[in-house]
Image 1 (cartoon, rainbow, N blue to C red):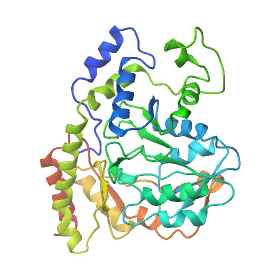
Image 2: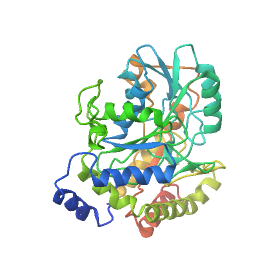
Image 3: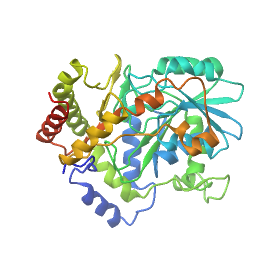
Length: 376
């Protein structure tokens, strides 16, 4: 069986975890946490990076820093993971869903402005599959309406938009290091902060509402409870696992891109015959091969393809159920405008196996079975 995902592993993870244990510093903000933060800051140019326990928590921190309050509205796509909406719903805000572009599955930037009301506080673009949203347009709209931009770049590390790293373009960005992502710490994430004026407040929220970070830097002689907050700080053992991958991030990225290009080349004849659609990467966008997906004719064909692949020993999957169609989506949010593409395109999309240890031979076997399904 070719599974859908295998968590990335370089071989040094256990060694680094042992080092963290030996230093008797396994709680947060240890040596490996700092190394990961610094690596992300250097690679993205963001003002500050704070490793978190998940991308969900990174987005929640962004919502706190943005001072999202009950009744506020946040514009986002419906085709995304629940965490994008939950971060703002927890603050009492209303997710306002708009339709996606069928080419990239990202939020349609041309529909955002019409969804803005006097209650809108932020825009939360989601960079699906590590392919950037049209950020120039989104940032220009945000400037005109005095809105914050909170990038859900869960899938976007190592990807860029017109030379700028995803997650570091808006006011805040969130990365995921879940086991399904290009780089992993099991469960984990990172908050990217553009303007350093938010850093002290972010540290307080992240450290249970205390000024503990300032204490450990020697800036104060004792720390205390100064605001509300929670425990968003990951163990240094998790960070040690991640550091082993960030050290070799370029090699991992290059291998994934090779696999992605192989998928594309071998399945292109099917696209040329109009049997399926392959991913689109717009000009100016450099993706990170987070996933490889195809689009079938419709839901029925997708179901048949996934069943055929499973019978052939290949685990392929579909992705999000649009949030506005879910019970919680109907309860907490609303869809602005027409759902022209969100539901229809989500029902056509199928994700093929994609992970660091996937081999070229396995990709050839998978594409061969897809061709067999379509009798090519």
